[in-house]
Amino acid sequence: MQSYSTLIIDGKTYSYAPLDSLGIDLFVLPYSIRVLLESVLRHCDAPENETAQITEQDVKNLAGWNAQTPAKIEVPFKPARVILQDFTGVPAVVDLAAMRSAMSQCGGNPDKINPLVPVDLVIDHSIQTDFAGTSEAEKKNTDLEFVRNAERYALLHWGQKSLSNFRVVPPSVGIIHQVNLEFLADVVHLQEKSHTLSQGKRGQVDNLLYPDSVLGTDSHTVMINGLGVLGWGVGGIEAEAVMLGQPYYLLAPQVVGMELTGSLAPGVTATDLVLTLTEIFRREGVVGKFVEYFGAGTATMSVADRAVLANMAPEYGATMGFFPVDEKTLQFLHDTGRSPQQVAIVETYCQKQHLFCSPAMPTPQYSQVLSLNLAEVEPCVAGPKRPQDRIPLSQLKASVLALTAKGEA
Image 1 (cartoon, rainbow, N blue to C red):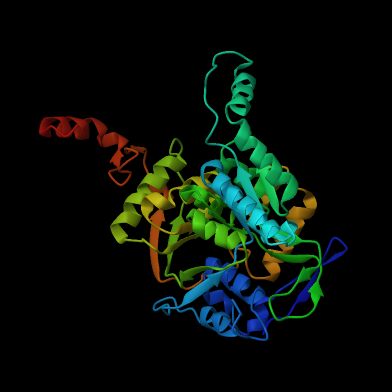
Image 2 (cartoon, helix red, strand yellow):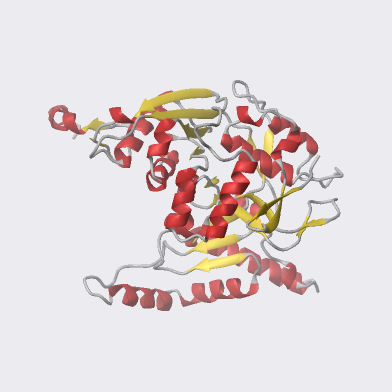
């Protein structure tokens, strides 16, 4: 079933696994399902045998996704990469070191133990504030962090030097989600070196392009969906399994389409919008489902505002809230210093694979469609533990007085 096609971008030839080769109507599928389908297609094992991880039947099952009644099938998803924060990432490095030690004791080559997908560990939970109020505070805090946790940084330094497919982002660079959004995510991943095809296959393909996708050990990994990169948070064991080449299994999801129309009024922020959406989603029930945003209103939102909506997926209960790649995505990549070549790759590849959203594209079929006129969103407040208890700013005084009278404030 699997085959590769080529496309030329700025005079260079790239390979990709064409979704068109499936012979189905891709336009009825939500964009998030198309990304999952590309992954399953690209990793399909042939010929199939008892060791096959992803079979032709898996591809057919997902290709036949039905919006109203998704089949109760498991989707074997292999993301493009894994992202770790330091609390959960350090134990993963310890496990890799232990496996290398065991390999050495067995007389094998420990250098063969490596992550099989790119892994980034971002240190953003560790640093403490001992100094403040001076121009040297950041440097002093960072220096003290390296002294306090010298053993941890020695391990991570070893990991970055010794392990393939493993990078470490040091402290004081930024929070993991900011680093992921502005630096690590490439939207379309390029594997330049020869790519050995899945188990049982013979042959190689160079300069392979495929959608960026990520599983992370932080629940708010979902922020990256604001950039058109499919991703969500998983446990440490699941992340390690993916690092070592195993698929992450999920049930074929229902996809809730959230249609956004109009534009936000002056003074209304993305926070006001996401609190409004959280109230809607909690009322409708989106737990365990994908949410995909569409409609003319999405074109009025920057990637930064989209990231706010995507980041709140754990609060509104969805697996993730996805914004397909579009012109705003390309602009963000340009504004954050991605190379013109990378921006061209993203645009050309996504258009070729029907992953690029534009007003001319037909609306996919969704399991459920909700809608919101952005112009109707008003400034509001809500507590961090119960974001669904949203209070419009115009009603704040009356609400506080009522709660106080009841003794609930």
